[in-house]
Image 1 (spheres, rainbow, N blue to C red):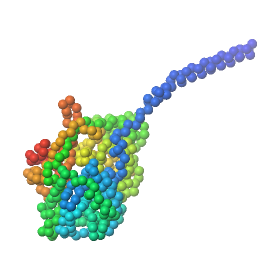
Image 2: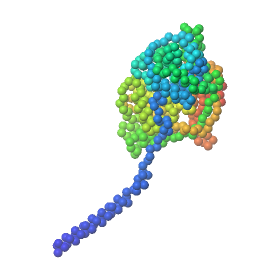
Image 3: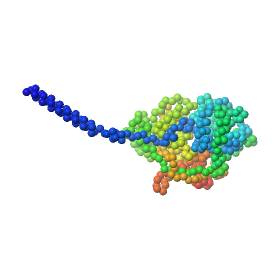
Image 4: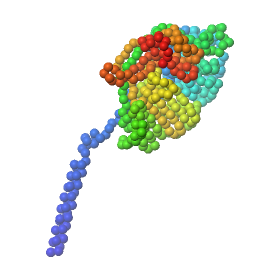
Length: 473
């Protein structure tokens, strides 16, 4: 009797266990999402910029925004997008130099360069340091040491020497009126071929202007230190004005590349900023002014003031990995304060540099620049959350003032030529609202005037009152 009772208990327990297994199996079956549902939970990577802007070698990010071409007395700009610009930049970036020596020049030397031969002059947005130039040219530390007598690099000018059958290069410091010459390994026939293949732009013929009024090619000025040279067109310069419907970068798209996890709850500060933090990384999102600041780790790199390339190579890879180059950007400025380096890359649109409208003394972060700061093993990355698409919403034909108009404008604005470091064409960017009350960004053509004291003035186009001389921006 007792054995039969035990058998019944065992049978009951077994039945319960079997039923329980069915219940658990059913629960797992119905609670587990289907394959298709799990697929929906995966958020694909949403790259920010176009791939073509994120496949550049370093020299393509540190190249000069203009090349001044000198062809037997005719002078013109070659800018990004022009025929022959890319090939010229690659040739210059890969050339090697040797036999450095300081040079004393006279009127005959300058006359040869300005009037009697072909030449390529590298023109940057301002005077630069030697280590900045070395991020574009192939310059080892011994090459930079050969230029130590120059405070800054104002211009780099290449020209043929038919007697020696070689191409020479001048490194020019206009502030100290000093020149160091070197020999390049560019074959002279290759150099001359560039001028026979590429046509001269008919609308951009330039006239060189000595800021002190004393042309260095004039024998009467042989005993005067050579002057800084400005270039302005002999006729008004056709240029287009653009209006764009800007593209927005979603904060989630920034987070997915800058952090290894998705679910990060932000901390909201009193000023409305959102701060995302994880694994020694922080991303601060300023919703009011539409920019972000990211601070994160950076590989340890050898400290060397003379070699900025490793840091810039890393920054280029970091940005290219999430396609953060949202247009053509070129290195504009390198600022060193102690062990802190700040790199500013400037947007080039339609071949011209872009400057956001506003005071240059205390600029906010806008789409005209992307900024990096490196200090030891840490980097800081700052950018605007809008960028310009490929195609504009509207295009208008305009003209910039010619040489006479610019000089008259500066005279009436009481800006002396001797106080000017650079003049070049560019764009001023700003927000506008169209008839449908949509926010758009306008690029207005301007002459960019850089003064020796670091200030910047903008001369508008003829259509925007450039011939009114009512004062500079």
